Length: 136
Image (tube, rainbow, N blue to C red):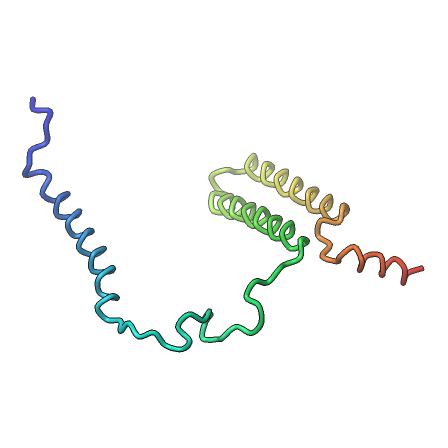
Protein backbone atom coordinates (compact mmCIF):
# COMPACT_ATOMS: atom_id res chain seq x y z
CA UNK A 1 0.00 0.00 0.00
CA UNK A 2 1.40 3.36 -0.99
CA UNK A 3 1.34 5.91 1.86
CA UNK A 4 2.15 8.87 -0.38
CA UNK A 5 -0.50 10.86 -2.16
CA UNK A 6 -0.15 10.78 -5.88
CA UNK A 7 0.50 14.07 -7.68
CA UNK A 8 -2.67 13.65 -9.73
CA UNK A 9 -4.71 13.79 -6.50
CA UNK A 10 -3.04 17.09 -5.49
CA UNK A 11 -4.07 19.04 -8.62
CA UNK A 12 -7.38 20.26 -7.12
CA UNK A 13 -5.55 21.54 -4.03
CA UNK A 14 -2.85 23.19 -6.14
CA UNK A 15 -5.53 24.79 -8.31
CA UNK A 16 -7.39 26.05 -5.25
CA UNK A 17 -4.25 27.60 -3.75
CA UNK A 18 -3.42 29.21 -7.10
CA UNK A 19 -6.97 30.62 -7.36
CA UNK A 20 -6.79 32.03 -3.81
CA UNK A 21 -3.43 33.66 -4.53
CA UNK A 22 -4.78 35.11 -7.79
CA UNK A 23 -7.84 36.57 -6.05
CA UNK A 24 -5.73 38.06 -3.25
CA UNK A 25 -3.28 39.49 -5.78
CA UNK A 26 -6.13 41.00 -7.79
CA UNK A 27 -7.68 42.50 -4.65
CA UNK A 28 -4.37 44.17 -3.83
CA UNK A 29 -3.46 45.27 -7.36
CA UNK A 30 -6.76 46.54 -8.81
CA UNK A 31 -7.26 49.40 -6.32
CA UNK A 32 -3.72 50.63 -6.96
CA UNK A 33 -4.38 50.67 -10.70
CA UNK A 34 -7.74 52.46 -10.43
CA UNK A 35 -6.76 55.20 -7.97
CA UNK A 36 -5.18 58.46 -9.07
CA UNK A 37 -2.60 59.48 -6.53
CA UNK A 38 -3.58 63.10 -6.23
CA UNK A 39 -2.80 64.78 -2.94
CA UNK A 40 -5.61 67.24 -2.34
CA UNK A 41 -6.32 69.81 0.29
CA UNK A 42 -8.43 67.52 2.46
CA UNK A 43 -6.61 64.25 1.85
CA UNK A 44 -5.22 63.93 5.37
CA UNK A 45 -8.41 65.09 7.12
CA UNK A 46 -10.40 62.53 9.14
CA UNK A 47 -13.58 61.46 7.37
CA UNK A 48 -16.48 59.45 8.77
CA UNK A 49 -19.54 58.45 6.74
CA UNK A 50 -19.54 61.56 4.59
CA UNK A 51 -19.45 63.92 7.56
CA UNK A 52 -16.45 66.03 8.40
CA UNK A 53 -16.01 65.78 12.18
CA UNK A 54 -16.38 68.96 14.20
CA UNK A 55 -14.25 69.40 17.27
CA UNK A 56 -11.77 67.00 18.75
CA UNK A 57 -11.87 63.46 17.37
CA UNK A 58 -10.60 62.05 20.66
CA UNK A 59 -13.80 61.87 22.67
CA UNK A 60 -13.35 60.85 26.27
CA UNK A 61 -16.16 58.72 27.60
CA UNK A 62 -17.06 58.67 31.25
CA UNK A 63 -15.72 55.77 33.24
CA UNK A 64 -19.29 54.70 34.06
CA UNK A 65 -19.81 53.80 30.40
CA UNK A 66 -17.39 50.86 30.41
CA UNK A 67 -18.93 48.70 33.18
CA UNK A 68 -22.36 49.13 31.61
CA UNK A 69 -20.95 48.16 28.21
CA UNK A 70 -19.31 45.07 29.68
CA UNK A 71 -22.54 44.09 31.44
CA UNK A 72 -24.41 44.52 28.16
CA UNK A 73 -22.01 42.16 26.39
CA UNK A 74 -22.30 39.60 29.19
CA UNK A 75 -26.10 39.65 29.22
CA UNK A 76 -26.14 39.57 25.42
CA UNK A 77 -24.03 36.41 25.54
CA UNK A 78 -26.55 34.84 27.88
CA UNK A 79 -29.25 35.61 25.33
CA UNK A 80 -27.35 33.37 22.90
CA UNK A 81 -27.52 30.51 25.41
CA UNK A 82 -31.26 31.06 25.87
CA UNK A 83 -31.77 31.07 22.11
CA UNK A 84 -29.84 27.79 21.74
CA UNK A 85 -32.00 26.29 24.51
CA UNK A 86 -35.17 27.46 22.75
CA UNK A 87 -34.06 25.78 19.52
CA UNK A 88 -33.47 22.47 21.33
CA UNK A 89 -36.49 22.79 23.63
CA UNK A 90 -38.24 19.58 22.54
CA UNK A 91 -35.07 17.49 22.83
CA UNK A 92 -34.15 18.62 26.35
CA UNK A 93 -37.63 18.24 27.84
CA UNK A 94 -38.47 19.09 31.45
CA UNK A 95 -34.93 18.70 32.82
CA UNK A 96 -33.72 21.24 30.28
CA UNK A 97 -36.60 23.53 31.19
CA UNK A 98 -35.68 23.40 34.88
CA UNK A 99 -32.02 24.02 34.11
CA UNK A 100 -32.91 27.06 32.03
CA UNK A 101 -35.21 28.29 34.78
CA UNK A 102 -32.32 28.11 37.25
CA UNK A 103 -30.06 29.85 34.72
CA UNK A 104 -32.54 32.71 34.26
CA UNK A 105 -33.03 33.02 38.02
CA UNK A 106 -29.26 33.32 38.49
CA UNK A 107 -29.19 36.02 35.79
CA UNK A 108 -32.06 37.83 37.46
CA UNK A 109 -30.31 37.64 40.84
CA UNK A 110 -27.12 39.05 39.26
CA UNK A 111 -29.10 41.88 37.68
CA UNK A 112 -30.77 42.75 41.00
CA UNK A 113 -27.37 42.65 42.74
CA UNK A 114 -25.82 44.94 40.12
CA UNK A 115 -28.72 47.37 40.42
CA UNK A 116 -28.41 47.41 44.23
CA UNK A 117 -24.68 48.14 44.27
CA UNK A 118 -25.17 50.91 41.69
CA UNK A 119 -23.31 49.32 38.80
CA UNK A 120 -26.11 50.34 36.43
CA UNK A 121 -26.16 53.94 37.67
CA UNK A 122 -24.72 56.31 35.06
CA UNK A 123 -24.76 59.37 37.26
CA UNK A 124 -21.50 60.83 38.44
CA UNK A 125 -20.68 61.15 42.11
CA UNK A 126 -21.54 64.84 41.93
CA UNK A 127 -24.95 64.12 40.42
CA UNK A 128 -25.69 61.53 43.11
CA UNK A 129 -24.76 64.02 45.84
CA UNK A 130 -26.99 66.66 44.22
CA UNK A 131 -29.89 64.22 44.10
CA UNK A 132 -29.34 63.34 47.75
CA UNK A 133 -29.21 67.06 48.66
CA UNK A 134 -32.38 67.85 46.71
CA UNK A 135 -34.33 65.01 48.38
CA UNK A 136 -33.64 66.35 51.89
